[in-house]
Image 1 (cartoon, rainbow, N blue to C red):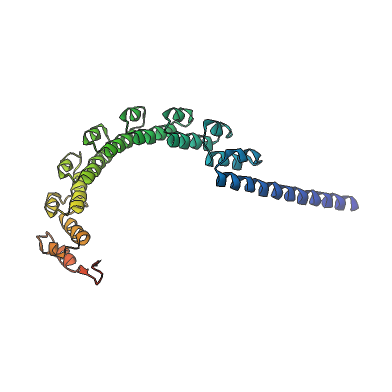
Image 2 (image 1 turned 120 degrees about the vertical axis):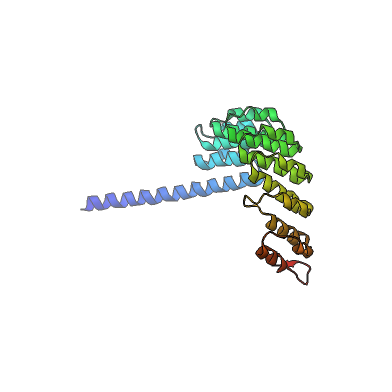
Length: 253
């Protein structure tokens, strides 16, 4: 009985010592981690004993390729590190170090949009990721002709719509493949320009409607006389008429 009591006591003591040592090193690791982040220096990361915390430290403080290479092989954090470094340094070649294909192609996408370079988008095999790259470059350069490279219907329409919005050019709203995106485009440009005639071009076959377009313009421009224009729905016309200007000249619903 005394023997087993001694074993339990020794085991308990070792457990307590181990816990104290673990807490000591953990606190030490947290201290190094906090200092590394605050100083933006990966050198402090080397002193962290916990592998996961050390890997995250290198990622958070990355400034050169060698920082990512110090992260445990096979860790997803390593790919994130290369991805962030590639974008921050605007270095396409760093994307090639990423093991995961999806993450690598997202890296190409971000660099392509940042550089406004469609040739980078062509490196992407995934249609959806490639389309967002083409669309991003088109919007950044305000070049609607690049939207023709976008295959997916929704992204194609949003590409033309965003450029039409930025350029305030409703003529681009005829170019999306699908009616929904054409209606969305007219709705966006109408609200941005305050041109109520563009609301007449909305088909009424999608969630974007002529009447809601007029109400939005009345609300945004604080021009409640728009509520007296021709509405398709008496109910929507009345809803518009119920808008009021408050004491601070803001619209009150």
